[in-house]
Image (cartoon, rainbow, N blue to C red; front, side, top):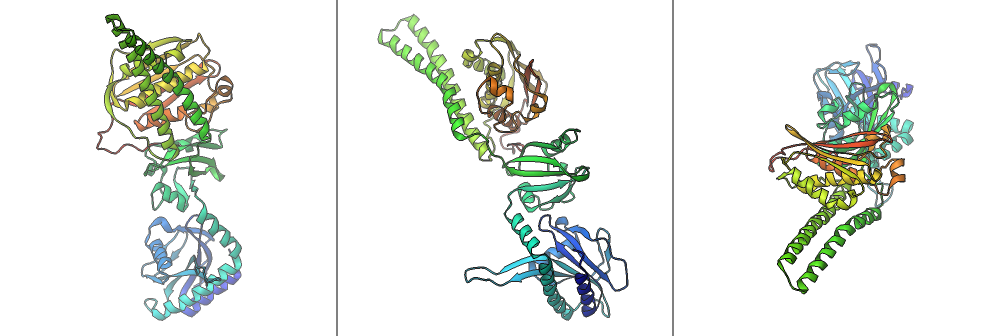
Length: 502
């Protein structure tokens, strides 16, 4: 604020309370930091530069005293000297809350109280510390300081307080080393961390998603990056990072919206369910005809085959419905729940190939897999990974081209991969596939319908298992999608790792 009036006021405070000096700090509504507005030292010590001096969430002896003074609306005395960023206040130091108060204007209105900042008085002259009378004088003077601050910046103060009281967006300013410079209250609540300022991203980002976002900004042509983040409470947030001045970056957390209307999802699910329903209905009608005309040994074999096909298609229906419900959970910001069992991944692969025989009929299918491979995981959801990969390849690759599906045993991990000779993905869009709900490339929109949620689901399921999705693609040549999964999952009694949900 740099006000001559405020400087004269602080000088008067020192004279009345008999302190060696007085400083006035305002409390930043946006970042919870103390900003030095005036510094008067009667010993003629040079004033430090005005500006930010401390974050009250830093949990130092001084900032704890500031919080206590503001919350209790009383003076706090510290006997030891205080060291701030570019100043030292000799003890004893009295921290005086500066709180703006206004009586209710209407009968139904509540009185208004806003903490504006603090006065700090140091080096009591003529005594070892500040007594009760000093504290009473300082409290009276602090009310005058509040009136002075509000008079000079009332409109700005009201705007900032209103904006940050209602905003639901979590904001963090990150320096070039990956440390958090400033974080607002919404960010602290989202991350369930009381103190963020000064922490490195690695301390709050166990899966490295925030660090990955910042690293994307290091590309010369990249000024913005987007992705997803799951909080310690399992809530889903979309995250975006944007370059600020001097190489710093701003990270914003917002509730993850599904950009596609709900009726589009319902329409797609209805279309997908039509095929297994038709197969089941036809098979049951055939079995009924056989039974009506008398049953021979050969008829029983035929009926058995039709029953097996109906069971496979009913399993497909169940999985489609389950996938839809899980997408709904993602939309609501909840975790995907895993039903972990031990199963043969190759048997699961063969099941999905039978289920999708109609969709894959127009392509050359190349299957590469061992005879058997036992893993732990949610069988239906891992089948859904294969289901989405294969359907996408069939959708975006012309008939007659080759689709390759492979499963590789790599020790502690297993790799599920599906490659095609389709339209491919532009390099700049690869990182957005499955991470931005509803996102589809221009070429994919021209090639086939869809709403861009299948790959979102693949990412969620893969990450829920502690795995990762890898995509390689060349525009006009084809794509290769991989889900790398651990063979074993944490025991059912252990907490699941955080999910990165959109």
